[in-house]
Image 1 (cartoon, one colour):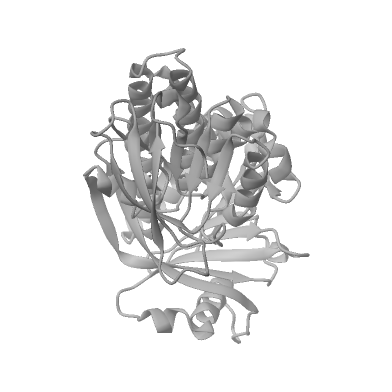
Image 2 (cartoon, helix red, strand yellow):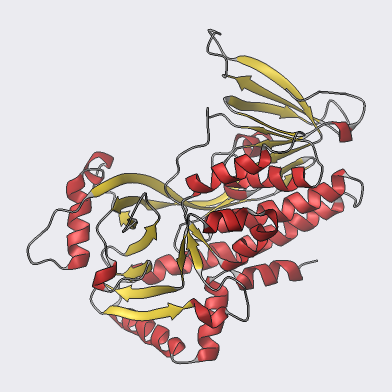
Length: 420
């Protein structure tokens, strides 16, 4: 366990709650800057999360100096083109990310499941002697009133199998970063409201080894449909053709058990395929989950800061969620390191809040909601208008570039950097 001195807040580590990609990246940025850091994770190991898996160009740019991008590229899939489709119309537009070759050194998306990223970050973090990750340590509470310049954190240690009950452990930290997900206990411990709503429908994720490429599908395709849209993503696997992952909305009339039956996934695949005779698809994975659009009212209360899903959640259409969390981590880690070392005053952390919360409200929330509404539009006139608009954008190099600057999150970073 890290030392727990009382005399100087700068002797106390920064406490990061949550060992997902956002928490581990925050800790890595801090450790690289010479900041002692401790990560608390309630699970016994990094988790297997099969949802997020699309990384946009600015994310790859940010992670390159850390060596993370290079490690991701070794196992990920480069996606230079992606498609807008319609279930009735077929292919609407194939977007070529090469249009952005003068805007970014990474003119493509990278597909890599986040459970493949977390071991990369963990391995890099563990190389620093002043960094520690404590698995099976469940955050319980914090108190930033009893000791000026420090935060008392209490966690339950469940790591000892020889103990009948988990034992409480107290830490003294200089700052606390809540990166513990949408149900964040850190956020709740400082009474920050999580404004927004939960979508009435659930989402289902299904993976298959059936290869959609010979049928003309790019490694990423969004298929609009008034009854049930579909989003396709090809992910790396132990061998070719990789895993093709499908995300679809699920109505309230079905139980989770019905949705998780292979019969349900096969029906959707056959519908997309427009198969005259239904075929049996090899189903590798199925899940179902709730989707939220929420943003924390505050990203900072005193010495407690939020990042990633603890601060904001959104639907997955566009692949903005994990990317924006990584942008949070890089921004916060760099600024907090400067504050920790006395190079800047604490007002710099308020700039983190202004930049990241503003961009999330104006960009991530607004565009992910718009993407969802566009894919599920039921009015036939508006559907035709949307298809015509996308095709007209594709006819103009200037409009195409601007469209891709926004969908790739490059414009999001430009907007954040402009906030002072």
